[in-house]
Length: 106
Image (cartoon, rainbow, N blue to C red):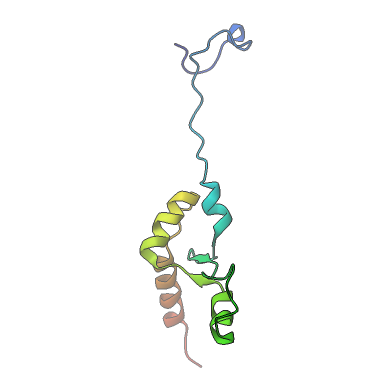
């Protein structure tokens, strides 16, 4: 087995056991369906908006056309699929609230 820096005689592909480091690949299906906001929340499309919309009221169609935010329990799993595990929305909101409370009131 080959470890560490590869010698010149191995550059040609002589050693087949050389292992590269693991590169994380995000789930492409989740990447197409969900977006991560600046604060780390997960935004998704509204549901029930592809077909059979004629029987729904206009208000319902408007509501379902808007994007919505996932609940934090599900969002944590989706962030793991997308490779965004270091973003914590609750921590960001807490830090923003602290910063707002520290500012002097004029």
